[in-house]
Length: 178
Image (cartoon, rainbow, N blue to C red; front, side, top):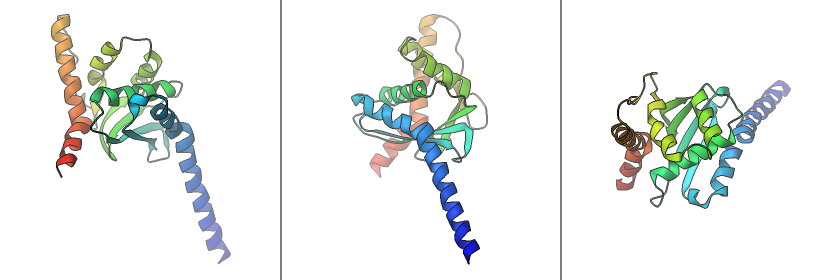
């Protein structure tokens, strides 16, 4: 009987340690991002290690967005979080909506987003995000456009809009009508 109690205590402590590590190293930073900028009100994001224990990959799980928030608000929150963890190295950052993985970014690109936040032209950053988005099977989700600046920018902005719809907006709109 004592062995059972010890095993239960060990499991509880282990689970508590895993959850604490996820909070300390990831979610704490997200909570700061959401609190520090009043434009982030209405957005809820959970950030945690993949399967809660794989520290080389993280889930960036958008949980909710209010009707007052724009897709730019959602993108800004992600960029602000990237800046908070810019010194960390991840191999992948999964972009999820309400617990369902939709896409991923390579960790090196996510690190670059964090390092360049506040320095790089935000329009450039936003319009080039889609070409760095991958489907879960490893294929690029969007094209890398080449050609004249105006044509390329137009296509990149279309991709950014489509990316937001595919990541969370379509599901958000559907949930509003249910």
